[in-house]
Amino acid sequence: MERRKALKSLAVALGGLVSLPGWANNWNQATLPSGTSLLAPRADALLAEVVETIIPATNTPGAKALGVHTFIQKIVTDCMEPSAQETLTKGLTAVEALARKNDSQSFASLDASQRTALLKTMSQSTEPDQKEFFSLVKGLTIRGYMSSEYVMNNIVHYEMVPGRYHGCVPVVAKNTTSKNQQNK
Image (cartoon, rainbow, N blue to C red; front, side, top):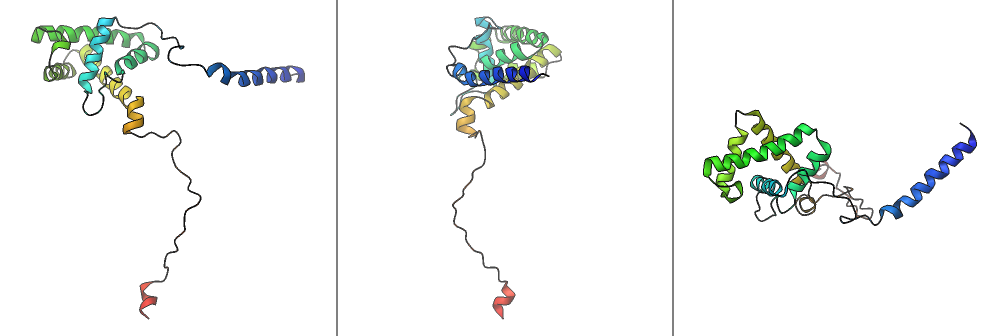
């Protein structure tokens, strides 16, 4: 490589690195593109109720309050194969159909024990689509909940850089003499 080309490339790279922090400094939730949603609003609400059934609110917020259903849609849309997207949409349709068939109500209007029983039925179903749906949603719900800001700050107490350096601590000398020497 010629020296002039190398210096020119280095100058461009350095200029880009210098301008990057100023360019990315004003990023926030409102300025980032949200993309299109995988699910219709009704299906999104149903997914929110499913994740709330898996991790309900107690003295800590539940999965719905932490927006885990949005996390699931984002992961399935951006990071998974189209077959996973199809599994999610078909599974939500199956949840609603099972709720109407078994209890003559929508899933959202069922009480907590009925919802849990319905999801347990899906997890033990002989139909692979229902089992796959439940496995996908349960795994992503746990991942989304455990990596949420609330859980990481208030429950797990996540530290970006673990470990501490305590440079000024008093050193206490231990008595190194053995009992045999003391008894003499």
